Image 1 (cartoon, rainbow, N blue to C red):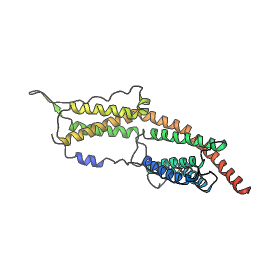
Image 2 (image 1 turned 120 degrees about the horizontal axis):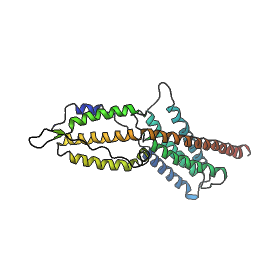
Image 3 (image 1 turned 30 degrees about the vertical axis):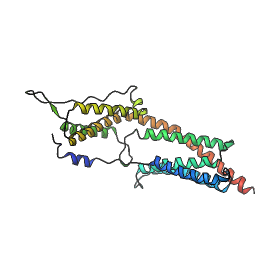
Image 4 (image 1 turned 90 degrees about the vertical axis):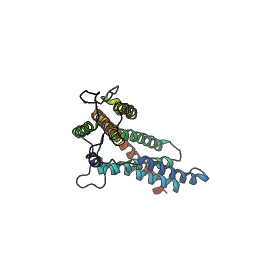
Length: 286
């Protein structure tokens, strides 16, 4: 059975999701900074009040300040915005990780008083950021980074079902009327939508196993048809999961915001106090 001629066109019209590399960029940056720090530590741990330690603290604070402000400004921009929201999110994550790491090195491993509280809050904010990113990626988005609505997901599911109906082979014994092979329903998630959001990698692994079984049940086809069937069934499963977890993921992300933002504000208030005190005692009282 040959795939319909219009399938390549349909495939070409699908938006290509942008791959982001924020974790890779962050790891490379952290590695480079670590190498520089080890070089500066050859005569002892750089003091936080020294030129190198101060430089780390200032640059780290600037990066964290950019983390806290620039992405929020872009997200709430009206009219003509600069760049994709997904790109801004990528650099929001990079500056948050790298800036926090530089602030940690700036402490010279001394965590007493206000500096210790700031360091603790920094670690909490960074850890919370990773949780937020995980919840953020649970919500389907366009290439530009805008949220996809439930109606749009259902429309994509319906379009995929039509293409899948064209490709799904008919089965019949000799002399019988051919009938369409019905695809198995998506397996229910124990614990409902909440588990579907939290345990996404595990659920995806189980769905891939179900996809392989479904393809085996479909019998033999030519390679092009088999590849397109795999893609369409995988797309169908993905859309069903997105519909299943959409409302819960949005609620969890909203709850995360109510916790993450106040902690971030507290961190920056204390950071400004720390910077002001450092300027006052190190400069004005000399």
